Image (cartoon, helix red, strand yellow):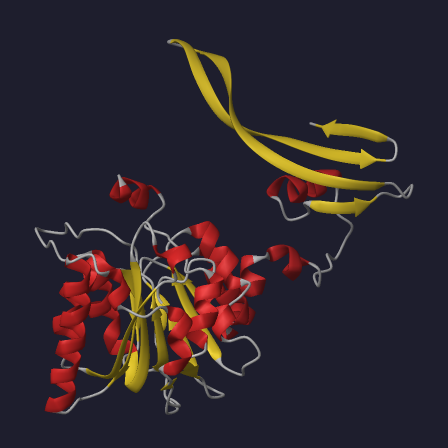
Length: 345
């Protein structure tokens, strides 16, 4: 039942703000740090961690509505499946906040849990010395041990406070990316084994909670200046438009794409006839708001519909049927004072 519920919500279970603030107590975040949340939801967790700090926040979110909410809270957000559509520079971020979907993997026979697949995929984005905050169900911890035990230092494993702990038995793994000494590897394995054994024996009191997080400080390093690749293979029309308007290419092609702007600077040698004006309106070049000679404001829209006129012609051998193309021009205008719709054909 829990799995079906998770899938219905796209595996989205945001970290409670109170727990995020408890985690924040253990993080020493310097100015100009870069923070990444690859399952950012509405961006609330990173927004809390960055509160009052001069840092850059980056997020990735698959759900479109949550993505839009995250854009109001974080500096940079992508609309993407962070497991399959996300492309990013390696070793760029000071912090990886990872609260991935909770589910069993089923891709091409791979039964590795989704939480662990996210960890494998996103661990390289941390710089050496960067800090991982990894929020997962306790049952998933065993599969994560081979990835972290030999590649991290300062390992800390805490569980959620009792009021948030059920129904998923969530724990927080916090560690620093780096090459540990053999004694640290042994200590990591012992800590992991203790936590795994505690889960299978249902001895939940063996772990401290995030209320004790301040006793386990982790300092974030400053990243070195470097170029960033941070994009999605998914096409988001709204983001494309924003980037296009900032591009130098936009200025070069704008007049060609919008002939109405180009036409403003063109003056014909003689006055246009009514037929000319009708064709301009029908072609769309003159669509928009106009002011008539009597001062009335009109919203004008023109259209052209192609038709065929059939005529007959008597010839020596009989009757010849002629098909002649014609173009029916219609111009509609909405007047607001007094309210009326004017149609000219």
